[in-house]
Length: 140
Image 1 (cartoon, helix red, strand yellow):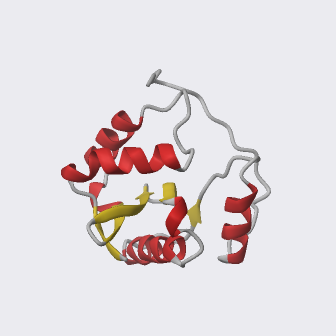
Image 2: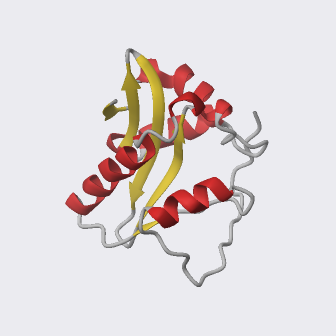
């Protein structure tokens, strides 16, 4: 798998990947999320490509205190082959180069496979409560 920065031509394939992986929720508009990311550290939006097909994605960001990852996805037919780990390693390397001391992420409680993946990758559960407030309503 070749990891590279997202290109505008990848848009439909990435949104289809997110749908396939169950990452799109009713309150998320994936097209708007892509546009927002391209306006904020678009160079930290990566795709994994194999044989001309987008099989993975991950959006990373750093705001000066800590980093974040969103939309880590690997096509179901390509899972369990190290692609998610490769995407995370790429993002972690880029964040370290920016001076980022810590990477945070959120996983839905129901996503046990993702929880196990992150635990196996060295991530630990922080003793925090995650809060959110929707500032702009998105609809699909």
